[in-house]
Image 1: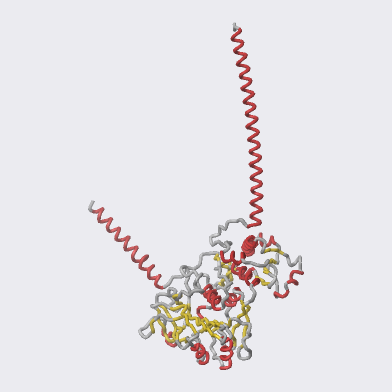
Image 2: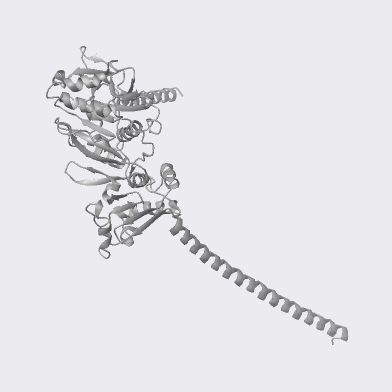
Length: 503
């Protein structure tokens, strides 16, 4: 039988056990409640963060561009243009927003870019989508822009308005079967140029000189001038003067000479500070005596020699010369000369004659290499290979002359002529993103016209560009890959065999 002390001890143990169980229940309730509260707080926090991130993504386009070519990345040049905007810009898209946003093809890419412009504008750029079918009056509002179509994009400021078509936002090429396909995105270049056009105080004007059997097929140059915010027209010099508001004229591969009256009109234009691009072709129908004399007054002469290169040309095409580009401040500053090269096809050697006045300054921009050679135009019928009678390079392929004239009050007037070869500015060369020609020509135009607000933004290609190999690079690849590496492997094999044989 249990004594009294035993019963007392058991009672104490029961009390302690009950107290411990109550404490455990209390702790379970406490920790369970805390866990529940923490879970609820965590879920609420996740929801709020998602809402906040969603808002910020919508408002500030907080998205990561994971495309291989960084299609939607905005350059620093564009950011500077947007930061410097002194007036509001409205971008009107003639379509439902869902049509752009939900598109998996052309419109979707443009939609992404427009989002970023609006976000970077921080209130200075407004993008709106208006369906012209539902709101036909929107077409009447912009009737001065000409024919408008669905999906067109209108950039508007208090100064002026510009229309862009979605297809112009892309770099296209045509294959051998005549099928057009898109190879790159140029939306940023188009939109940023449009911003500059709509906000600049004055607009530059360019005019093609016509009436001498010039080259009329200059679509890529036209597009480049338009993108650089030139208003482009034509002037038939035989029956009209060059308008006073024209800043730039283009003399594109004439094959018929200018009259003395036309030369006088050109002299007057240059005396007033006008600039020019001159391109010449080897295919001349008759001597251009008057035009040649004008060029000599500016210190240059297009010779009858065509330039070839046995090493520094596209592989297998010695007439497709890759020139050396001189460093010229204001032109080559922002060009990617390490990863790209220019191309001059069928170029005539340009001689610096030293016949210009003391107020003219001649600068050689491009020249062929020391491995180049030149043939008379009549001799190329016998082939392109170098002979002992050919002149040896280097030869000038692009030259710029600047003329400075001072009046009695020492006010200075500057005129510039960019002398190039027709094979440097053809559509096929300017449209190729792997050549430097388009960007170089744009930089040169900005330099001679002092249009410092223009920007150069390369196209963003959907696929890797074609790898063009120069003739000397082909030889290096041949000797290294075909000769040196196999011989090294063979020698190593012989050494290993000889050593194992004597083990």
